[in-house]
Image (cartoon, rainbow, N blue to C red):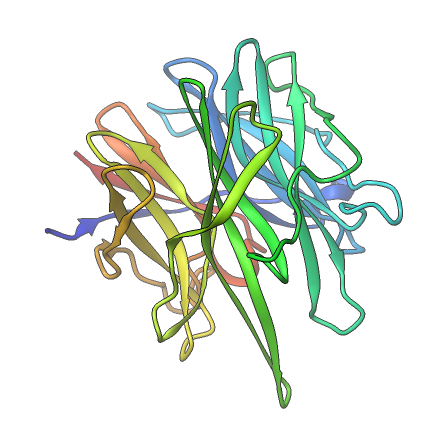
Length: 306
């Protein structure tokens, strides 16, 4: 299998600090096509209190130019004490009839820093993605016997009457001296309505012995299911981009090292290649990704010609 030789195009979108909710970060790019040439990309920014909000911008596939930036967030943190009171972060979008389902993570900080807890929420748009209403003040998926620390980062596919979710399953956080190491892999759940989910501990992408984390999947279904994702090695604090394929969407073969995309010295992605999304373009694949500090500087772009 030949490597995917992605060509970097630099920072594509930066947070606008004139907006209170974009003090920093444009993280976890999550997109949906408005038409054949217009893409709407949702992202997560943080205010001065580090609370997270969801906003969006529109851009053209052919020119790669941003043509619209929303000045207000479409999703905001919940009330004090709710599962999303410290932030909401979009991770997946699904068209369902005339609606768009947005799956997002809501989070609360733990008592001991940097411990945090996340659950998965749902918001629904009935106006083409211009606004969203939370389905519930409670999460649609939270911790379980299979996910003792957290659930997060859901990627949802709808295939006929079957809804499939690939989500981050938090196993533990280890405090060792002054170092904190988190561990999470990718597990699988199914649903008949996109709201109520059944899970039995199926692991789709498990950690290798030298890894601590696998983060949100970006999946394209061609002849096979193809997934791109960030992963972190124990010896390296920064994420790198991995790749996997599956015939049935459950059993996956990983090909770390297949994505030929490297960090850039003394730049916004010098330490980490993080939250990634791959979009099918006209005659190419387009990768949106984050760099250092979980998308602090914004969203970068890379191109794979086909």
